[in-house]
Length: 148
Image 1 (cartoon, helix red, strand yellow):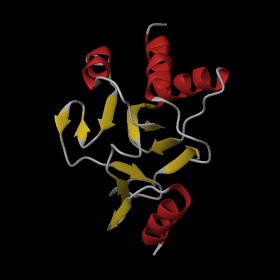
Image 2 (cartoon, rainbow, N blue to C red):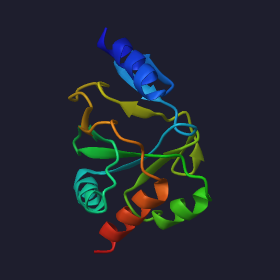
Image 3 (cartoon, rainbow, N blue to C red):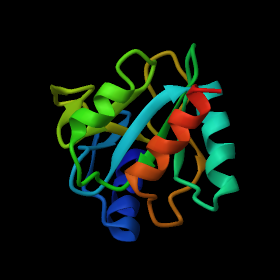
Image 4 (tube, one colour):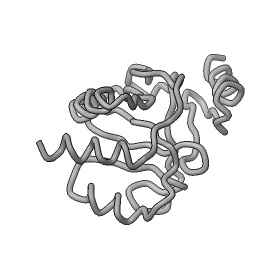
């Protein structure tokens, strides 16, 4: 099955502790990967900004409606409250160390080829072929784009 094959690939190639349940491939945010979940248009503008400074994160397309993107980052080593406060009034989700938007959660980061009921499968916009960028770099890019 393609979902189990994806789990094995992510584990072998990237060292990510992934899991599959039904048509969902996921990993728990924290030790290996964190993610910002944003509307597609914000993701596109942020990715353009990040490419301009030579920092391209892996990006997942999450088909909607509305379409959303997940920008994957290194685990943050600072205060999470600062990031949460910065995006409190924005449509920006943040998955970190078993939390989603500041609340304890079993929420995971869904990975391609996950297929949610009634939706197209998740796909990579930019594959996870390069090291994950630091969280602070993506936070600055998101903040720059949101203030323009």
